[in-house]
Length: 359
Image (tube, rainbow, N blue to C red; front, side, top):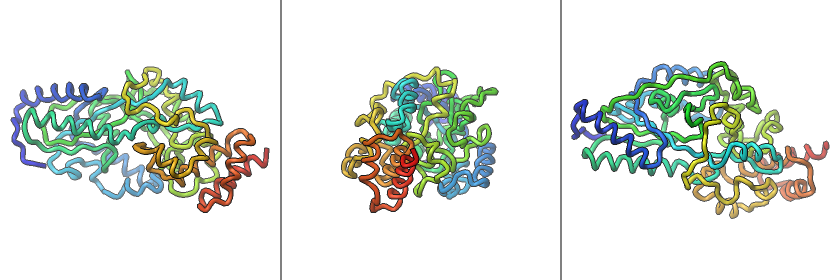
């Protein structure tokens, strides 16, 4: 980071913090908090999680050593992290539950229905940096949105954004958990906020409802069993043991949030970037499975869905079609891709057809 040129007095930093929080609100963040960079407890939990191999094939989780849990190793000179929250729920939870219950519909995790959140949040954080610079002059900072080894949930909890729930998502008592997080590393010695405490109590709703029992204990997620991992991070075939439990979820899973009692306080977002595109919130499985690669590229432009590629997209839908009710249309679209040039797609199509052959 650059050598500081701004005033560093306590009164100056207190005033600047008030401005920063206000600017965050003006830029579309629903909440902002500030924390120091001490993450020893979180570092220990991460080490244990990695040791148990719960990260599966996500090798990047261990690739950077302690840079993930020591912000000043990732960005030398970092003193504080501004953690921000942006809500994304595009519709009522009841509407999402109805979609999940309709086996002929494609269920896509609500965060991925609109514009890629990385772009939206990163742009707003850079705008925040410009406002600060206009106010105090040059200073040191870097912004992150899932773009580097950052313990975003631990930082959010320390900054008072919310607490890490038993499902390992961050929960705000007034708004639930349907939000994205972004981080602003800086050398500004801003006053810090109080950490949030857990309010999960004895509730086990998220653990009980998880389709694949991926939440193996409170606050402990085995990603290898998680539908979000299986349909997004996993680059290989989906293990047969989990295919029935995936249901109609073709990109991610929201069950642990949909059934969390704290989300009764959640409201749909007014952020236009997160509004559903191309009818993905209501699309039928057979329709999506019939898309050509050109169709897919066109309709996922600027979307987080792009990260899985066309092959894994079809892999996921094939599994969902195997779980759907048997209809002539379902059999027709599956048969049309029987013997696909991709061995992975062909395998999952064969599995899907076999499910219906047994009916």
